[in-house]
Image 1: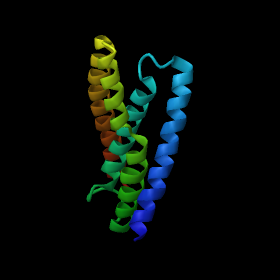
Image 2: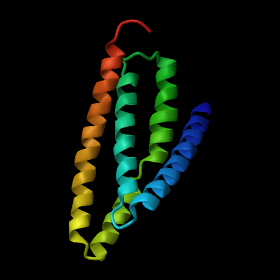
Image 3: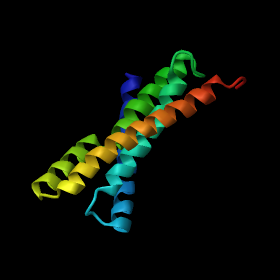
Image 4: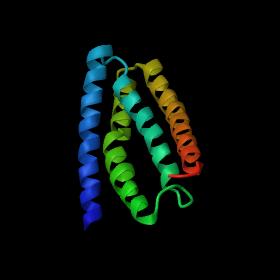
Length: 134
């Protein structure tokens, strides 16, 4: 039952973080292009890559820590923080508004940048995991 609590707390924190960051970015750069969602998805991909590398069986975490990190950070915080459903709706709205360039740019940039971010995060996490000592 405790694992559900960790997921719920992490999800709440991730959702509040997403709301705050998206608002801050939208106020700074406007809402013509969904820059807030882009930043959230790329940074969330980066963070989940780091955590995944640290939580892999040969990583630095013992099985108890691995379970907590997976539940609280990966499923909870990253799940609440990243916004694929928002990305999808914003892309659909851009298409419906006939903003083809923005819609295509959002899809292409999101896929490429998030894949690069998760790879970079995973690589950095794996490098840290393989370092000797605690």
